[in-house]
Image (cartoon, one colour):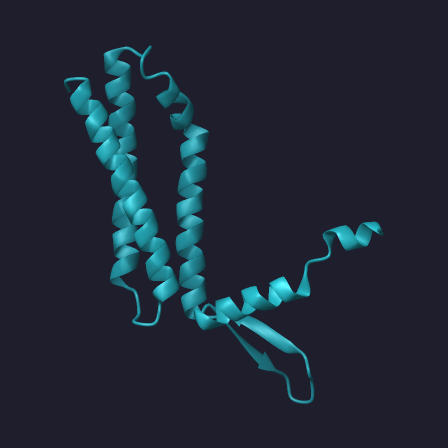
Length: 142
């Protein structure tokens, strides 16, 4: 098998994904006069969707960079004051993310179902994390 075939995408798979993006209103296509090739453009809805996804993924990367994931593994050995400080910082961060997600939701159009679903999923996930952090604070007596 030639090496170029290993990285070549499956045309059927790409076609399905492009159709899905079109159905969701994230992309649209056009043809130049006299040209048979389609040119795909990201719609305004698609740009907002991409912006929301980028913000959420950046927040997750920022979370990893700050070492929060590493710190939660050591909750049992941290001093109470250090634990409370870490949790307060994280709660403030999660509240900011939730606020930005809710702000994005308030500007949704009626046809932005995919964006609504993604925002609702992440809102639910961050609200769950907030409840988890509150449980930890209660268990520490803070």
